[in-house]
Image 1 (cartoon, rainbow, N blue to C red):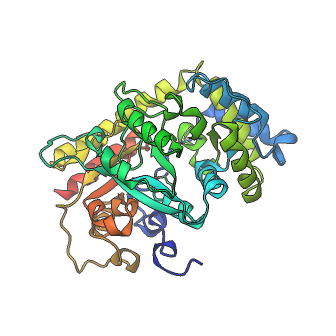
Image 2: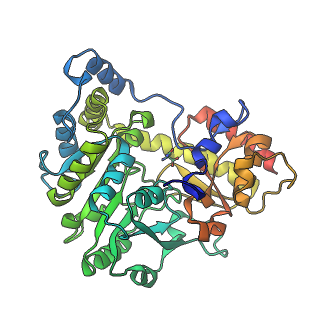
Image 3: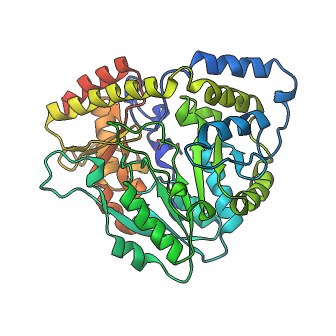
Length: 409
Ligand code: GLN
């Protein structure tokens, strides 16, 4: 079935992976950290590996210790005394969880609304399950805004309303947003919720960057808005929370009516998720409060964000200051490069941003991700203006990147 087009094309993460770039290129592309998870979390992983039970299959819902930890951590934030037997599902990363929701709920031709740009994985996850993606733009900041923030990426709610058809099954919300960094305002989520209620839609709320909301901005969980619990599944990730993206441990939280069918799908896709690392994730959530882990981690990320922003300011290039996540969108529309540069074929077939990001990676020595990948093919030109730079790296690396980026002058 996967014969042509983007489904078969190399994914952007592989094209811009360290393996394809010069060895001294600083990798600010794919969003993963160049530092280890906290020691007290990896200690728990080690302990689990040296214990018999967590080396074997766990319950398809997830190991009970992790489900209890999720209940204790998220229950108060969701104003809900979560039932570990029916309202929590541990998944093999947030991706697999979301894929399983689509498998469980989409019938052929069902439409799924997503805000564009969107995290690239949503598109194939919807289409592989027979669904049809429908795009509603996050309108880029007006050119007159000198120092745009992610809050300047706006939604036209009439456009959202017009996107709903009798076939619409679900809306995907992603806050904090990848790649924009937008933290959806309460009023925006209320407007989305009103449309979901009016047209009886499910909401998948991807909140994997929930621990990275800067400057005191409020992270609102759409599941907590009146009437929304019953139609919302909230997505979380140990990879983002504990600097462990390769662990592939995520979770879904929602009403039994959503979790039960999704469990059936997930059970047949992966049966269960990595058992020892579930124990480690549980220990992370259990101890986070006492260690003030997320507060400290946020401060570190704010410092990392500042280093890149300062580098872009120095260059005089416009960027979107993210209120959340660990990504910054840089306006690369004016970065010049020779058209006869030796670009690989995987880059040549794509938008201008692919060439610009490749050029910046190979000539300046800092990699990023071309943002047209986060748009459907019809709208890709909008994304071509941007490169996405990840700041989930240690301060030293970011300072080196900041220095190298001055080569763009
Ligand atoms: N979520 C990560 C990012 O946006 C990478 C995900 C992936 O590699 N598929 O960079």
